[in-house]
Image 1 (cartoon, one colour):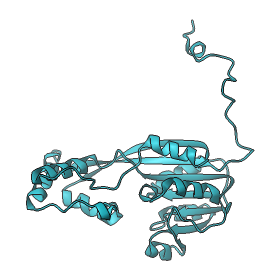
Image 2 (tube, rainbow, N blue to C red; image 1 turned 90 degrees about the vertical axis):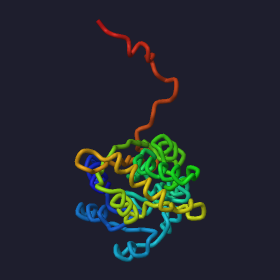
Image 3 (cartoon, one colour; image 1 turned 45 degrees about the vertical axis):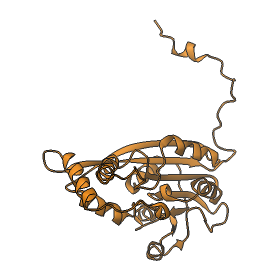
Image 4 (cartoon, helix red, strand yellow; image 1 turned 45 degrees about the horizontal axis):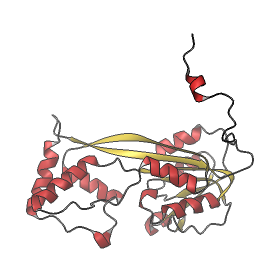
Amino acid sequence: MADELDERLSLVTRSFQRALDLGCGPGLLGERLRARGVEVVAADPGAAFAVHAGGVQCDEDRLPFAPASFDLVVSAGTLDSVNDLPGALVQIRRALRPDGLFLAAFVGAGSLTLLRQVMRAAEQAEGQPASPRLHPQIDIRAAGDLLGRAGFGLPVVDSEQVSVRFPTLTHLVDDLRTLGWTNILSARSPRPFGRVGFEAAHAAFDQSAEADGKATERFEIIHLSGWAPSPDQPQPARRGSGKVSLAEALRPRN
């Protein structure tokens, strides 16, 4: 995600002076911004990450920054788990100066299809009803709606598929736990699997393995971009002001 956001920033034909790295984690994105000569303020809800980055500990939906503090806000891999994402996006937009840029990426709703299948197999083996083993994730359409509701100008949302191959279910689960991508809905967490469910989960994973013994898990990475409103930005034409109908524009020409 950090690599992709850095590459997308390279396509923007303007410079930035002060950026907020929101949900900085180990600081991968902040390092890239500093290499560009940008002053970076790091913020993360995790105390260890915030201290390591020399930044501020805060939740993404409770920003302690004054309005118009940054001309760039970036976020890699955290916004999908925010309690109040609409509120967080509004606060991000307020923290941006007019015509400031917001870039973000996070894991979206098309992710972890293999893990969901494996967990369902375990639930069926133990006679359990289907339960949310992962926190709710955001699909691309909802992400676009949220950007618009938060007041961003020129909003753009797209996604990419990333495939990762794992030799065992244990390797997959260990990676997710290390990333902190387990179920954060602790008050409603389903009960753990017993031996029967555990064996069924591993068997379902092994059945999905390919010839080399590895199974493929897929992640959908959703990318967001939007600009803080400014009078200098291009504005869409007034509805109904077009001079040529769509049918005419699409009509085959000889």
